[in-house]
Image 1 (cartoon, rainbow, N blue to C red):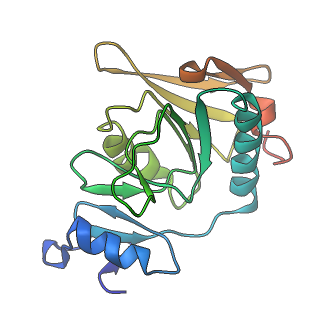
Image 2 (cartoon, rainbow, N blue to C red; image 1 turned 180 degrees about the horizontal axis):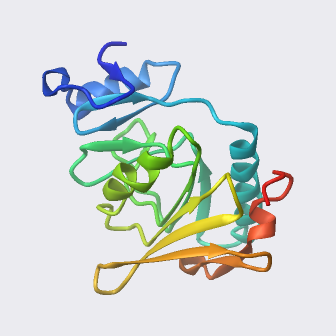
Length: 196
């Protein structure tokens, strides 16, 4: 695969969203796309994988008989301008899934996104990805789950279009996922991780 970069590349390496999708769909590895550049995704640590599993189990159980669904990091999402294609660690979609094309692999309408912070993705998840995610009209909540301590950062879209930021931590704290009206204790998110 050509033009894959770990750091921002010069503009002359630009590829179009269409070229990215063609390349990505033929690849055995996962890559994200930002402003014309492809970024190789790194593997996940055991703690990262355990947090993702905990989120899928707890949220999936809660949503079993509801009109929302929880999906893992294999589902790609894009924003309306299609200048970003990303793989959230965990996402919730409510109502009918809207997909970009007949390949059924790029979701247009996530309601809630979780990113699990790791040393290699921390600044990207808090910066660039957050900026692109906020452009998705259907997105109501964005959660950043730390893997150094039992801390979750939430961004919730307000009726004005602004985003309210909050830091959630503490032994008895829980994350309230407003979109699905679900309280998720931090102890359940961090179960079996060894993270205190």
